[in-house]
Length: 141
Image (spheres, helix red, strand yellow):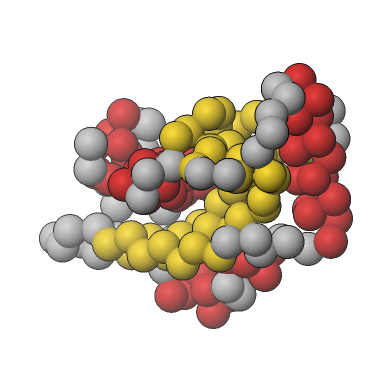
C-alpha cells in the first residue's frame, strides 16, 4: 500500500496538513517495511505500558530490537523542529527502556536487547510521488 492509499485509509483530506498521528503512523509503517526487507521479524508494534511506549519491537539474529521512530513531514518541519532524533531526550529514553524491561519481563528471551532509532523524512509534493527517506541508527541509546 503506498502513502496516498494509507492517507485515504486514515481519512486524511488531500492537500490538508497531516495530523501528528497520521504522520507518525506513516513513518512507523515505512520503518516496519524497511526492517522486514532487511530480514527482521516484527514481534509487536505500539507496545504500551504505564510509563512507556515502544513503536516497534523486532528480532534478528542474536538481538531483540526496540525501535523508536521519529518522523518529520518536510524540510520545513526539520528547520522548525530539528532533526527527528533530537526529540529523543533523556526522559524519552528512560520511558522507552522502562517499556522494554516490561516487555522482556512478560516475554523472556535469550536474545540481547538493543535500542535503535529510526529517523523518517517524508516529502509530499502535489502532483509528485511521495518520498520517504529513513536514517536508521543501531544501538542509538
